Image 1 (cartoon, rainbow, N blue to C red):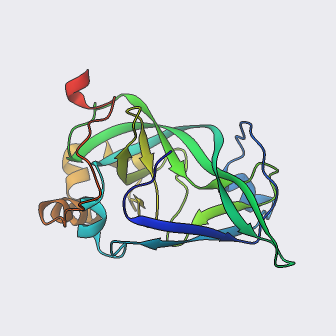
Image 2 (cartoon, rainbow, N blue to C red):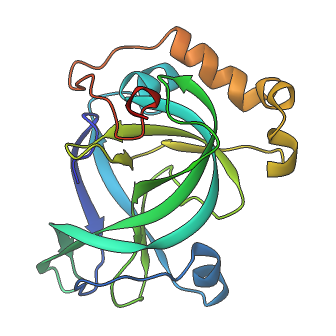
Length: 215
């Protein structure tokens, strides 16, 4: 996976060994089991607190309902600082989801059809903890978010970094209606941000496999 141009470097404080396989434990299950959550500290070349900069760094901005958590994959060894001061390299978690696109805000993905996305962050391979970017959250099944997604070399979509998915306060049932959706504070905020986006020179204008023009 290749993260969007805004991330210059990352590191995770405190660690545990990680190998490769699928893990479908959910964020909610982790909370129930009191599994610790650690912050991934990242340096960015954009202001991740400014929606105009965040949407400008992405290839797609869309509203989507999370329909399924399909697993977690592990790639790209990253340095982890252990309690004794030593550094260990472990796999980086990417949580895999299926999402139904309800509305496009920037560029056009296929609507009302499940598409896969990868979210940078998730549970460690041994199940000991979650690693999640600061000011970020893992999507939850059944909820609706504004997603800022980045097209990968293979045409897949990656959601990564602080404020890369924003939860709607409204329930999913209320947001299937276009008028209700477009009247929400979240939709209007990110629609306006796209209208006034700050372009990111690090991002190539590459279409996803799930772009409407490819269907």
